[in-house]
Image 1 (cartoon, helix red, strand yellow):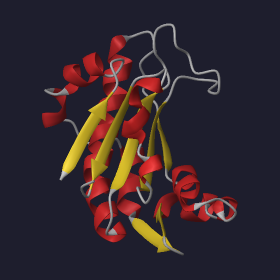
Image 2 (cartoon, helix red, strand yellow):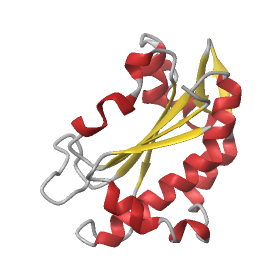
Image 3 (cartoon, one colour):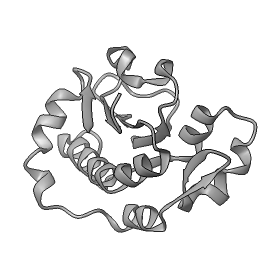
Image 4 (tube, one colour):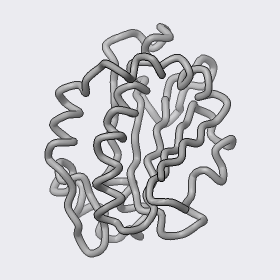
Length: 168
C-alpha cells in the first residue's frame, strides 16, 4: 500500500506533473544514488551512496533523525526557480526517485516508511535555511506515530508531499 499526502501548496504542482511522470527518466546523478542501493546498519536503513559520507555524523542521533540526515537527497534543476517548470522538474525527479527506492526501503524495514518531498522554492516562501533553491527528499522508517509527517502536513511553509509505504 502506498499513500500520498500533500499540502495545499503542493497540490497544483503535483497535479501538473501527472502526465509528465509517464515518460521521463531519472537524471544520472539520482540514478547513481538509487543504483547504489540500501544498507542496514544497527537497525537503521541508509542509502548506500550516503552511508559512508554521513553515517558517522548520525551515530549520536535517534533512528528517525539519523535516517532523515543520511537519507537527505537534494534535487536541483537547471531552470531558474522563478520558472514554474523548475518545480515540475524537481517534483517529477523526486517522485521517480521515490518510486524506484521506496519499495526496497519498505521491504528492508518490514514496517512503514516515508519519503518527504519538499520544494524549497515557492513564491513568497523562500527557505531561510537554504542559500539556493533546491528540492529535497528525506527517507526514513516510520517507527513511531509522532514521526508521521502526514499529521502536520499543512504546517509546512513550502510545498510538501509525503509518500508512505508499508501501510499504517
